[in-house]
Length: 131
Image (cartoon, rainbow, N blue to C red):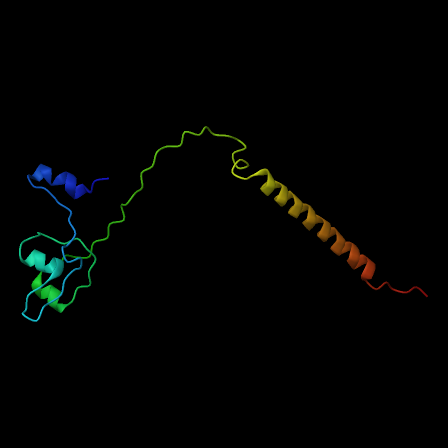
């Protein structure tokens, strides 16, 4: 998947190269009032812009022009279409016979316990004495 800027740049007579900063981080102000990191590379005209999440502060705002916050939620995954034909019993196939027998045994045990609970309640409940 190619970002839209990379498709538009050649049309405008330019090119876009995506490259990580040499230092590996956004940058900080050094004691000699210069910048290192990606901000330093922009100030030294090694890069034209930075596309990275960063926390704006006073020093960064004075050194470079910060844009408005961008939010791009247009990410998508691309995958091959499945070659499987639709099947009415498709929900059964992912599980083994042992799994289905376990589900059946659990259901039968639940029904037996449910019936025994009501039978035991009838047997153990006090009956009114007839005199």
